[in-house]
Length: 223
Image (cartoon, rainbow, N blue to C red; front, side, top):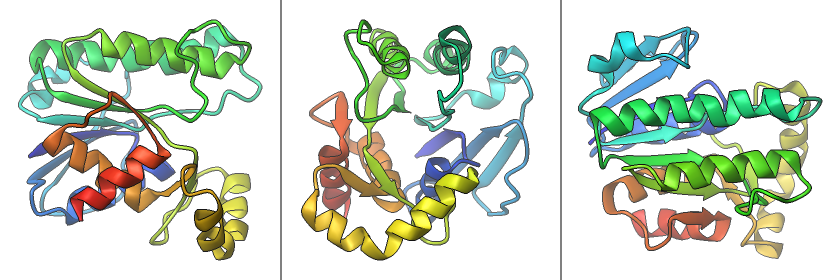
């Protein structure tokens, strides 16, 4: 299986990349980013591309992949809806449109978030925009799946690029086993998330929208 990862420098993307490199059935990993991730591996190919709204110059490189794991995302804190829409909806659709055209039917897994608003009319701005993005992806000629994780615990030394978040994860880490026992439906890890994505890319899933509980179940099925 050949996969593309968008957002491999972020916490989720790092976890997905790790699991892809470890999985024997993933033969090639193409990482798309605006800067180098600084990782060397025999089955890893890295493409540094500055304009994520125009992929016309690299379409040939993107072709022939079986799945795309779209892990790009930004916090909506302090952003206006117009700006958040551009970096969430517009950017995602630019990538998905190219992939749908050159590799119709490929698996496209979009990392959204718990609380995403499929109606697109709720009070939460980020949830509306994420919902609009999900709805648009589900209408495209792709095998699209929406991952809506709740709390994600980073594993294996993976850290968030946001210092505040990274500090918070470090505080929660010793308590995570308890959190998992108390609220198993609402928590997952970077490892489980990555393994679940690979599992869905290989076998598909009964649902197109997967919450943390479904994500963890997919991971267990892959074991």
